[in-house]
Image (cartoon, rainbow, N blue to C red; front, side, top):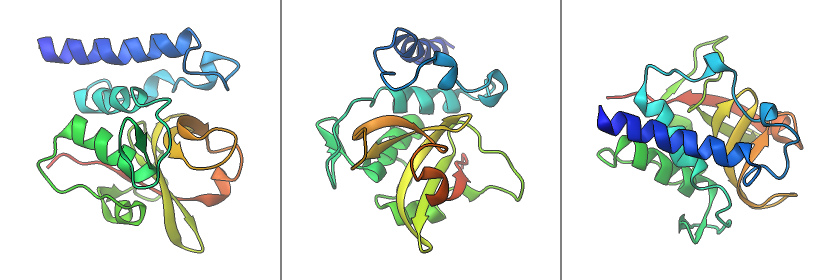
Length: 173
């Protein structure tokens, strides 16, 4: 139980940093970022830990093939975040396209939930991944655009909505 509360503390600390504006230079209001209260499944410690781990990477620079806090690419970010939250017991994908078969596809009509893996594709080929935070917000490592490195973006900005391909849900085996 102590571990659960320490992980909740990490998540709340990350949200507090966001609230103070230290990680949200591009959002006008904290409400633009925060998922709706019903969005986070509070009955699962893993979802909270996954999001907290992802938020702890905010500001990390982009580096193609990078796997560390000195530089990371989109699949390296998910590799590290999922590995930290779920453990590195099973092999994790390392390339964006490999995340297209990781976890389980969302059922038809299902809503994207915080912690789901978002896949972005061009001409049917997955080229980018991110982690859903809630609403239309997601965290990812961007290589180009107005914000590079690990940052928060929204499906409605830029070309993300057009490039969105599908989402997958992590499962605990």
